[in-house]
Length: 222
Image (cartoon, rainbow, N blue to C red; front, side):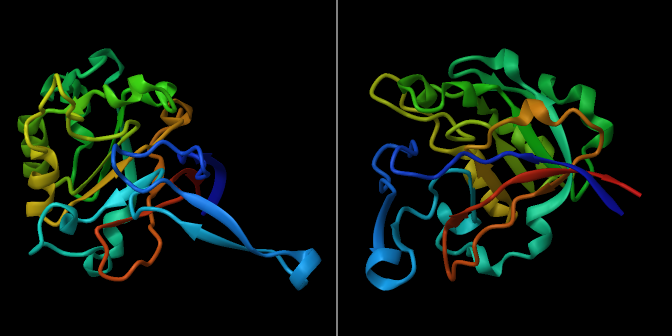
Protein backbone atom coordinates (compact mmCIF):
# COMPACT_ATOMS: atom_id res chain seq x y z
CA UNK A 1 0.00 0.00 0.00
CA UNK A 2 1.41 3.38 -1.02
CA UNK A 3 0.24 6.92 -0.27
CA UNK A 4 0.05 8.78 -3.57
CA UNK A 5 -1.34 12.03 -2.17
CA UNK A 6 -2.46 13.59 1.10
CA UNK A 7 -5.18 16.27 0.99
CA UNK A 8 -5.43 18.47 4.07
CA UNK A 9 -9.07 19.07 5.03
CA UNK A 10 -8.37 21.17 8.14
CA UNK A 11 -8.54 24.86 8.96
CA UNK A 12 -5.61 26.47 10.76
CA UNK A 13 -6.08 27.01 14.50
CA UNK A 14 -4.91 30.38 15.78
CA UNK A 15 -6.28 33.46 17.53
CA UNK A 16 -8.37 34.28 14.43
CA UNK A 17 -10.04 30.85 14.15
CA UNK A 18 -13.79 31.32 13.71
CA UNK A 19 -15.81 29.60 16.43
CA UNK A 20 -19.46 28.85 17.04
CA UNK A 21 -21.13 31.88 18.71
CA UNK A 22 -20.36 31.83 22.43
CA UNK A 23 -17.63 29.17 22.24
CA UNK A 24 -14.19 29.89 23.73
CA UNK A 25 -11.85 31.81 21.45
CA UNK A 26 -8.49 30.03 21.07
CA UNK A 27 -5.47 31.62 22.74
CA UNK A 28 -1.82 30.80 22.12
CA UNK A 29 0.51 32.39 24.67
CA UNK A 30 4.27 31.78 24.92
CA UNK A 31 4.92 29.91 28.16
CA UNK A 32 8.63 29.34 27.57
CA UNK A 33 11.04 30.83 25.04
CA UNK A 34 14.45 29.82 23.73
CA UNK A 35 15.87 33.17 24.84
CA UNK A 36 14.67 32.84 28.43
CA UNK A 37 14.31 29.10 29.01
CA UNK A 38 16.27 27.36 26.26
CA UNK A 39 13.17 26.01 24.50
CA UNK A 40 9.84 27.17 23.06
CA UNK A 41 6.57 26.04 24.64
CA UNK A 42 3.05 27.36 24.06
CA UNK A 43 0.23 27.65 26.55
CA UNK A 44 -2.92 26.76 24.57
CA UNK A 45 -6.51 27.56 25.57
CA UNK A 46 -9.47 26.66 23.36
CA UNK A 47 -12.81 24.91 23.27
CA UNK A 48 -13.12 21.21 22.62
CA UNK A 49 -14.76 21.95 19.25
CA UNK A 50 -12.33 24.50 17.90
CA UNK A 51 -11.50 24.53 14.21
CA UNK A 52 -11.91 21.31 12.26
CA UNK A 53 -13.22 18.90 14.88
CA UNK A 54 -15.39 15.91 15.63
CA UNK A 55 -18.46 15.76 17.88
CA UNK A 56 -18.94 12.74 20.10
CA UNK A 57 -22.54 11.66 20.82
CA UNK A 58 -22.07 13.02 24.36
CA UNK A 59 -22.12 16.55 22.88
CA UNK A 60 -25.93 16.44 22.79
CA UNK A 61 -26.76 13.55 25.12
CA UNK A 62 -25.42 13.06 28.65
CA UNK A 63 -26.14 9.33 28.41
CA UNK A 64 -24.39 8.83 25.07
CA UNK A 65 -20.76 7.75 24.53
CA UNK A 66 -18.00 10.23 25.20
CA UNK A 67 -15.15 10.73 22.76
CA UNK A 68 -12.83 8.16 24.37
CA UNK A 69 -15.62 5.58 24.49
CA UNK A 70 -16.02 5.40 20.71
CA UNK A 71 -14.26 2.80 18.54
CA UNK A 72 -11.48 4.31 16.45
CA UNK A 73 -13.19 2.84 13.39
CA UNK A 74 -15.70 5.69 13.62
CA UNK A 75 -12.97 8.14 12.60
CA UNK A 76 -11.36 6.42 9.61
CA UNK A 77 -12.70 4.84 6.45
CA UNK A 78 -13.44 5.20 2.77
CA UNK A 79 -15.05 8.54 2.02
CA UNK A 80 -17.88 9.54 -0.28
CA UNK A 81 -17.87 13.24 -1.16
CA UNK A 82 -21.45 14.34 -1.80
CA UNK A 83 -21.79 17.42 -4.00
CA UNK A 84 -24.20 19.71 -2.13
CA UNK A 85 -22.89 23.02 -3.46
CA UNK A 86 -26.29 23.93 -4.89
CA UNK A 87 -27.87 24.08 -1.42
CA UNK A 88 -26.77 27.67 -0.75
CA UNK A 89 -27.29 29.85 2.32
CA UNK A 90 -29.38 28.03 4.94
CA UNK A 91 -30.20 25.48 2.26
CA UNK A 92 -31.53 22.09 3.23
CA UNK A 93 -29.48 19.13 1.99
CA UNK A 94 -32.22 16.61 1.25
CA UNK A 95 -32.03 13.06 -0.05
CA UNK A 96 -32.01 14.26 -3.65
CA UNK A 97 -28.35 15.16 -3.15
CA UNK A 98 -27.50 11.56 -2.20
CA UNK A 99 -29.38 9.54 -4.80
CA UNK A 100 -26.43 9.43 -7.22
CA UNK A 101 -24.16 8.02 -4.50
CA UNK A 102 -26.51 5.47 -2.95
CA UNK A 103 -24.53 2.44 -4.15
CA UNK A 104 -21.49 3.76 -2.28
CA UNK A 105 -23.33 4.46 0.98
CA UNK A 106 -22.48 1.28 2.85
CA UNK A 107 -21.68 0.68 6.53
CA UNK A 108 -18.28 2.09 7.48
CA UNK A 109 -18.35 4.81 4.81
CA UNK A 110 -17.54 8.34 5.89
CA UNK A 111 -19.91 10.80 4.16
CA UNK A 112 -18.49 14.26 3.47
CA UNK A 113 -20.92 17.01 2.45
CA UNK A 114 -19.23 19.35 -0.01
CA UNK A 115 -21.19 22.60 0.26
CA UNK A 116 -18.23 24.90 -0.60
CA UNK A 117 -19.33 26.96 2.42
CA UNK A 118 -15.75 26.94 3.68
CA UNK A 119 -15.11 29.73 1.15
CA UNK A 120 -17.03 31.98 3.58
CA UNK A 121 -14.90 30.96 6.57
CA UNK A 122 -13.92 33.99 8.63
CA UNK A 123 -16.95 36.06 7.57
CA UNK A 124 -20.41 36.63 9.02
CA UNK A 125 -21.88 34.66 6.12
CA UNK A 126 -20.23 31.50 7.46
CA UNK A 127 -22.97 31.35 10.12
CA UNK A 128 -25.63 31.04 7.36
CA UNK A 129 -24.49 27.53 6.49
CA UNK A 130 -26.38 24.90 4.50
CA UNK A 131 -27.42 21.97 6.67
CA UNK A 132 -28.30 18.29 6.46
CA UNK A 133 -32.02 17.52 6.36
CA UNK A 134 -33.17 15.37 9.29
CA UNK A 135 -34.99 12.86 7.06
CA UNK A 136 -31.90 12.51 4.86
CA UNK A 137 -29.84 11.89 7.99
CA UNK A 138 -32.27 9.19 9.09
CA UNK A 139 -31.93 7.55 5.66
CA UNK A 140 -28.13 7.59 5.94
CA UNK A 141 -28.35 6.00 9.38
CA UNK A 142 -30.67 3.29 8.01
CA UNK A 143 -28.00 2.47 5.42
CA UNK A 144 -25.43 1.99 8.18
CA UNK A 145 -23.65 5.36 7.96
CA UNK A 146 -22.27 6.46 11.33
CA UNK A 147 -19.85 9.28 10.42
CA UNK A 148 -20.82 12.43 8.53
CA UNK A 149 -18.75 15.58 7.94
CA UNK A 150 -19.45 18.97 6.42
CA UNK A 151 -17.31 21.88 5.19
CA UNK A 152 -19.34 24.36 7.23
CA UNK A 153 -19.79 25.52 10.81
CA UNK A 154 -22.65 23.19 11.67
CA UNK A 155 -24.27 20.08 10.24
CA UNK A 156 -27.60 21.45 11.52
CA UNK A 157 -28.95 24.92 10.80
CA UNK A 158 -27.14 27.56 12.86
CA UNK A 159 -29.82 29.54 14.71
CA UNK A 160 -29.94 33.30 15.07
CA UNK A 161 -32.58 35.89 15.93
CA UNK A 162 -34.32 35.50 12.56
CA UNK A 163 -33.80 31.75 12.14
CA UNK A 164 -34.52 29.74 15.30
CA UNK A 165 -33.54 26.46 13.68
CA UNK A 166 -35.05 23.04 14.32
CA UNK A 167 -33.37 22.00 17.56
CA UNK A 168 -30.29 20.24 16.10
CA UNK A 169 -32.05 17.05 14.93
CA UNK A 170 -29.06 15.67 13.02
CA UNK A 171 -26.86 15.91 16.09
CA UNK A 172 -29.49 14.02 18.08
CA UNK A 173 -30.09 11.36 15.40
CA UNK A 174 -26.39 10.55 15.12
CA UNK A 175 -25.94 10.63 18.89
CA UNK A 176 -28.70 8.03 19.19
CA UNK A 177 -26.64 5.56 17.14
CA UNK A 178 -23.23 6.48 18.65
CA UNK A 179 -22.35 8.30 15.44
CA UNK A 180 -19.72 10.95 14.79
CA UNK A 181 -20.02 14.40 13.21
CA UNK A 182 -17.12 16.41 11.77
CA UNK A 183 -17.51 20.15 11.15
CA UNK A 184 -15.39 23.01 9.79
CA UNK A 185 -13.84 20.82 7.14
CA UNK A 186 -12.31 22.59 4.16
CA UNK A 187 -10.70 21.87 0.79
CA UNK A 188 -13.13 19.07 -0.12
CA UNK A 189 -12.92 20.12 -3.77
CA UNK A 190 -9.33 18.80 -3.80
CA UNK A 191 -10.50 15.22 -3.28
CA UNK A 192 -10.52 14.48 -7.01
CA UNK A 193 -9.74 10.76 -6.81
CA UNK A 194 -11.88 7.70 -6.22
CA UNK A 195 -12.29 5.96 -2.86
CA UNK A 196 -10.39 8.46 -0.70
CA UNK A 197 -9.33 7.11 2.68
CA UNK A 198 -10.49 9.65 5.27
CA UNK A 199 -8.88 10.15 8.67
CA UNK A 200 -10.69 12.24 11.29
CA UNK A 201 -8.74 10.93 14.28
CA UNK A 202 -9.17 13.32 17.23
CA UNK A 203 -6.92 14.23 20.10
CA UNK A 204 -7.30 11.65 22.85
CA UNK A 205 -9.32 13.84 25.21
CA UNK A 206 -10.77 11.93 28.13
CA UNK A 207 -14.55 12.01 28.73
CA UNK A 208 -14.98 14.77 26.15
CA UNK A 209 -17.82 15.97 23.91
CA UNK A 210 -15.43 16.37 20.99
CA UNK A 211 -11.92 17.37 19.97
CA UNK A 212 -9.97 19.07 17.19
CA UNK A 213 -8.68 16.87 14.39
CA UNK A 214 -6.14 17.12 11.58
CA UNK A 215 -8.52 15.84 8.95
CA UNK A 216 -6.96 14.39 5.80
CA UNK A 217 -7.92 12.44 2.70
CA UNK A 218 -5.41 9.87 1.47
CA UNK A 219 -5.09 8.69 -2.12
CA UNK A 220 -3.87 5.12 -1.69
CA UNK A 221 -2.60 2.63 -4.23
CA UNK A 222 -1.49 -0.98 -3.96
